[in-house]
Every structure is written in structure tokens, then in C-alpha cells.
Length: 131
Image 1 (tube, rainbow, N blue to C red):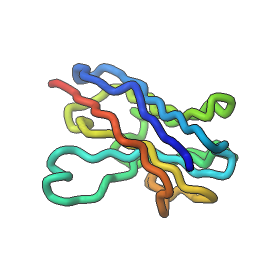
Image 2: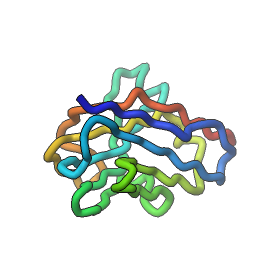
Image 3: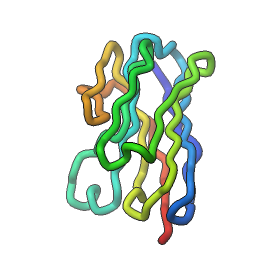
């Protein structure tokens, strides 16, 4: 069983930056694809699914992004620490959401920053951007 823990969220002003971390324990991520998803309160009220925003294939390091975050967010990994990161720059109020780390064993990324399936979710971490 893989445990997934996110950290680094908080409250910042528009235009500022945050860096999220996702540490996995219990298994190496060598055979995984990993991604960041998010869900804002409106999406949750409407019963919409979490949206994938950035995905990385652990072995190759290939990265994929949703259009809305391209050029502002950067996904990366530290193989030794089994940790995934999301550097978020030039944050906007519409980026306010709960951010989730997701893992898929032997998975692949879609071109828009999602996984085709999710085996493990983190509990999520809140990111709030004030205008």
C-alpha cells in the first residue's frame, strides 16, 4: 500500500508563487505515472470530477500540462526522495482549489495533464489565492 502526503499549500496573493510537494512512501515510484489534480468549491458543489492539471511519467520524466496552467506551473520530481513537486507561479484567484496528488501504477499521462486511471490519491491540500 502506498501512502501519499501533500504539503505546501496555503494563502497567497495573486501574482505570487507556491510550491507543492507530494511524498510517496511504501513503494518506489519507478513504475508510476504521477499527477496533480485540483477541485474548486464550485466544482465540488456541482459534483464535477477533479481536473488533472499536470502529469509526469516517473521513469522518463516526461511532463504534460493542462492549457490553463501551461507556462505558469512546473511539475518535477526528486527520485531519491520519492517526491513530486508542483511549482506554481503567477497564481490567479481562479487557481483557488484543493490540490491532490495522484498515482497510477504502470500508468500513462494524457496530453492534457491527467492520468487514465488513479490507483492512489492524497488527501488534498488547500491553495487559496486572494485578489
